[in-house]
Image (cartoon, rainbow, N blue to C red; front, side, top):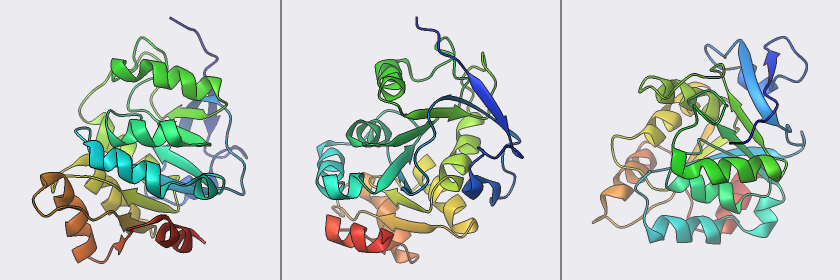
Length: 216
């Protein structure tokens, strides 16, 4: 088990993310490990199902091209599935946890090597929960408001009709952020959430050029 320096900032600290201050009920304290990304990067949340399939992974690897990855910081929740794939391909990334930042509290344990890799690569891991806060069901919807709040837009890659990714998308809309969604097969329940969002006005993204235009 590794021990990292866990720092904290309050909402009135100059380092506190300006976008996050704009949301309803921003966290008054953030705990963090690592480095805040350059201010000139576009903060893009990439979220989706924990049960993602090969289509979701292929979408991320094809749409998040090197040109885009140079321009964005990928914000996600370090969950299994889409979150993990997005963090792995990112050049700059912020992982928002629903637990304390200490390794003993970290969840899900399968992503502990990825957590360490993000820190090693100079990324940022943050949480509103103090160290030694274990995983609890209520923490993750609360965590999703931070993912949305840190981002200018949320990209939903794969999600069921009822999912945490759609909670994040709703919170993004409530706070005036853009929502993008990847369409998929009508026969795959993992596309139902994206198709619902598109029907409600989310911007459909089918290739990297569309995404680049949407964030430019």
